[in-house]
Structure formats: C-alpha cells, structure tokens
Amino acid sequence: MEAIKSFGPKLGSQLSLRSRTNLTYGSKLPRFPLTSYPDKFLRLKAAASLTCDDQEPKLTFKKLPPSEWGHYFLNVPVDVSEMNELGREIETLKPKVREILMSHSQGIDKSKTRIIFIYLLVSLGLSYLFEDEIDKILEHDFQKVDDMMTDEDDLYKVSIICWVFRTYGHNMSSDVFKRFQGNNGKFKASLVSTVKGMISLYEAAHLRTTTDYILDEALSFTSNHLESLVARGSLPSHISRHIQSTLDISQHRNLEILVALEFIQFYEQEDDHDEMLLKLSRINLKFLQLQYLQEIKILTKWYKDLDFASNLPPYFRDRLVEMYLYTPGYYIEPQSSRARIMLTKFYAVVTLADDTCDRYASIPDAESLANSLERWVLDDVTDKQPDYLKFVLKFILETFKEFEREFESYSVKATIEEFKTLAASNLNHAKWAQTGHVPTFEEYMEIGEVEIAVYSSMAAVFMCMEQTIPTHEAYEWLKTRPKFFRSFAIKARLMNDMAGFK
Image 1: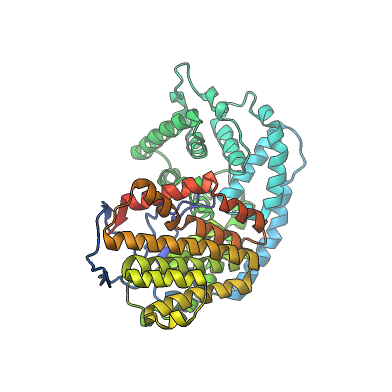
Image 2: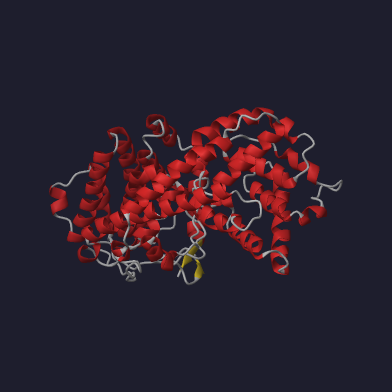
C-alpha cells in the first residue's frame, strides 16, 4: 500500500466534494488543501475592473501561484500487481454479497431488510458492483411500498427506505412521515432519542421536492437536534463524528467514494456490522484509490509535457488535480478510467479558455480566439496571432483531436458546438468587463448562464459516457435546455457572482 501511504499524507480521508446526485460546481471543500482554495471568503460587487483605450487594452493581472501539487504524483508509486490482487479479492467476495442481496425469501419484512442492505452497499461505495441487481430489486419492491409502510413506525427504516427509493428515481411519497408528527403538525420530540433515525431522516430530507413541505420541516427539525446532540458530547465518538460529517455535507450531495471513506470508519464500530461486507468495502476502497492515483499520474505527465509555464504568462489557474477530483462525481467505477481522464482534459481546456479571455487577452485577441474557434482550424489568421494565443488555440484543437480518436464523431461534434457557444459567451463577458459596460440583468443572464460552462460540461460528460447512454437522444435533450440544466446553470452563475475567494 505504498501508493496510498504517499497519497494519504496530503489527502488523508478528509476529502469533500460533490456526488453524482448533485452536479453543482459550488461544492463545499472544507478540508481538502486545494491549490487555489480560499483563505478568505469575499463578497463581490459589480465594477469595471480594467482601464483601457479603444484600440489595444493593456490588461494587468495578478500572477497566480503554481499548483502546490506540482509533479508530486509522478513520483507516487502505484503497484499494478497489488491492484490485480485487490481486483481478484473483489471478484471472490462479490458472489457472496450478491447471494445475500438476491436472497429469494419472500415477505414484506424481507423486502425492508433488503432495501436497508442496499443502503449499506451505497454508503460503503459498493453499489456500482451490483447495479443491475439493485435496479431489479427496487423496481419490484416499489410496487409494494404501500404494504411495506403499513404500520411501520421505525423512523430509521422508513427514512432509509424513502432515501433509497428516491435516490434510484422512485418517487416514494413523503406522506409516510406524517405518522411521526403530533397533532400540532410538528415532529414528535420523542424522536430525538432515536439517533440513527434522526440521521436517516435528515438524509431523506435532502431528497425533497419543492412541494415536500413535511421534509422541509424534517430538515429543520433534524438539523437543530443533531447539532445539539453533538454539542452535548454524550454520544459515542464514532456516532458524533458521523453526525458531524453528515451535517457538514449530506450523503446526497457528496461523492460516493468520500461517503465511503467516512462511512466505513463509522460502520466498522457498529456492533451489528457485517464482516464480509466490511471486508469487501475496504478492499474496494483501496482498489479505487490506487486506480485514481494511476489516473492522476497519467494526467500529471500529460500536463507536464504541455509545459504551460514556458508557453504562457502566469495568468492561468494551475489546478489539474482539483479538476480531476470532480470527475468521480460522474463516474466512480474502475471501468470509467478513460472517461475520468478525458473529462479532466476537457476541464483544462475550458479553464484555460476562460482565463485567457477573462484575465489576459485584449478585446482584439479575445475576438481572434473566438473567431478561430468558430472556424475550428489553424489557418493564415492564426499565424498573425500573438504566440500565447497560438499556444492556447493549438492546445484546444489538439485536445479535441484526442477526443476524436477516443469517442464517436457525433458526440465529439456535439461537444465542439457547445464549446463554441461557450467561447462566444467568454468573448461577450470580456467585452463587458473591458469596456465597463453594465448589461441589464436579463442580458447578463442570457450570456452568463452559458458562460458558467454547465451546458458544455454536460456535453463533455455525455461524450465520455457514450458507451452507457444513448448519445443522440442525450444531446438533443441538452439542446432544448431542459429545466433541470437551466436551473443548475442559473444557480451556478448567481452563486459564482455573489461571492469570490481570496
């Protein structure tokens, strides 16, 4: 485990990012030592940030420090033979866990037990190993959810079952929680003594819809009482730590692997833990850590060979590792290695294009870059561009050529079109900033909702998932700007503008 020992001193087990169930970029990162993570939270207000003449603005920028990771991961050993051995152990234990999961015992109580077991698989980072089985079980069991809930008064069971069904897309009614309210419509004070039930209700409340008023009340009720329980210091230490982690960021909003890092430590101290399940989760976690380390090594080598520092002024954000750490939110599985690597490269393209327009390029340079990207070719016009701009353009085009070698032409072309739209919005933002133009809110949001890169990023996510989703349908859907993605983009835009980091 030499690789994990090397990884551990910097990362430990205290990573915190966002999960596949929540795509928001504004994730909480309270403990991870990010390259450009803020020392200070800073409220922003609109202002013309630059002084320039009409012909050739001279932009000034604050030099950004290099990544504190540097080439660190190039020297972290990853033992392939160890990975292979872990993989064999996983394959040995999988059938045994599957047998428990697929037990053919009938009855309502067995269905409840099976769903709670699925919750453990999710929390321990093992659900991806049994995706087909879980889908079939939940499809079947959801048909009898009303029978399952009849006379069930265990807060833990009801909350976990609701959480599992909703996590997997089955809209279990929140009315089941009315049984835990008194005549005054408030949750009963006696529930506070059922600590696990309170934790699970808190988690279930994070899957509420805009009309789940009872879950709004549940979130307020559980938040206040769980904080008080921790403050009293009377709980076993592992339960207090688990509550604190849950309050810090809910399971629904966290990355699966980061949930597993914390939950394994909690679960192993529970008296009723399943030794075989715990063993599989530990082995799987080690395997994924090594897999991710190997991918970061590959990306670090790629980034080093590009040599941004020698080819560009230091206006760009050097945060490759941070960009990579977003990708397990979309693809946790070992077999998604290529997808994680390629999506990180796409993020590098988006970040450099944004920084070039936002922090360094004059308006003519930004226009030249946007026009070249619209033509999508290196040509005579490119020859007249300044060297830094040639490098940026070449980097973008060559990275997309790599995508063309890896993915279907349709998905790459669709992603290119979304990226061109993003580049045009970057140009508009640059013009507004450098000329001191203050658009109306409507004008700003029309451009800003694109410039925050949600749509182009989702296009890239689809591109990297082409083997598991119908890409034509996915891209046609994205073009319609579905309400889900629009609200995501608007929220990301406004959150990004309300506050910055220093």
